[in-house]
Image (cartoon, rainbow, N blue to C red; front, side, top):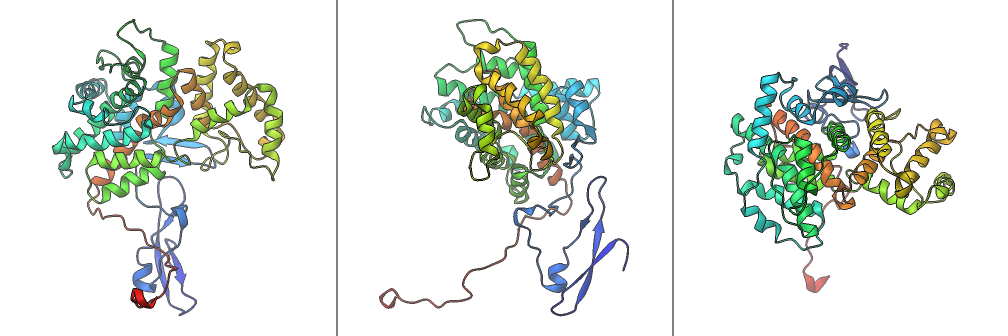
Length: 431
């Protein structure tokens, strides 16, 4: 047997095949099982695809055991410290950090496409006044396809790139218009003289009746949050975008599918759950009792924002965003905001408690991002929308990479069928 293969034997028949082992730059090697059905008439059974590599990618790498996150090979720590969100967008889309001229041209392209077609204003008016922002986001992003018919030509690389630019440019405008619509304020048009994050804050919070004052520390905290959430390998929403894209659907519908998946509370709702938990705790003096309930195996109480499914040691994003979060809260009067006082006390207790230390239940990125968004006065129902704004570049980068595959095939997962073997139809009068 070759060192670069693994032998799989069907003990029922004694028949064996050798499957190639493929090595990546980082991470575990994979078994190429594509001949398994052809040779042995077997599929693999892997619920939730937790041990299945569904694609080859050069964009993002995660090592959950070591707490490593790389965008195109660059450590997330370096990017969060030195980069801007738009520079990270360029990196994810095109594979390299931009030169000064490339960055200038890229920013110019983004600025050209921040406006929404005025026809979309009527589309917003079709939603009820209490619609969920994510429902509106799914609808509006999907509706973009009706305004850009060239996006349907997905085999044209220039059109694919333009679709990516449009999505990154328009998501902040779409998101802030959702907020303004739901609170009954007039829409605020983008100002292309502002940077990406400042423009978002301006559209989100400015009003015609008063000047808007920018807070540089708040803007930087939000920018770091966007960078940390820009991509995260083949998660549920990214896999949805790729699967939809494999059918050659247009990119706006693919991203709308990613947004719909992110809306699920098990995926994009974690930071919202953190804030709800802090409200339930109510006051820092109630934390010990709440933690005791969490430790009780017979109590259903959950502690949100601690530990991570992928990162088994620590979440590298949490280390970065923690500093940003603490810096932002220092500018606030904590005595007037008991929610943040409760959060900081919960963090302190958890980092010192042996129960949490032994189980590596450290505060994760959702814990701090929820606090930051609250401190920025982002409404709770807009939290997942903010996640979508950040993740759009990851979705379109993954989609563009997939569309460049020379032998792209439509995704078609298999199943283990457990239903009836065969039944004959019985007329209704004989049932």
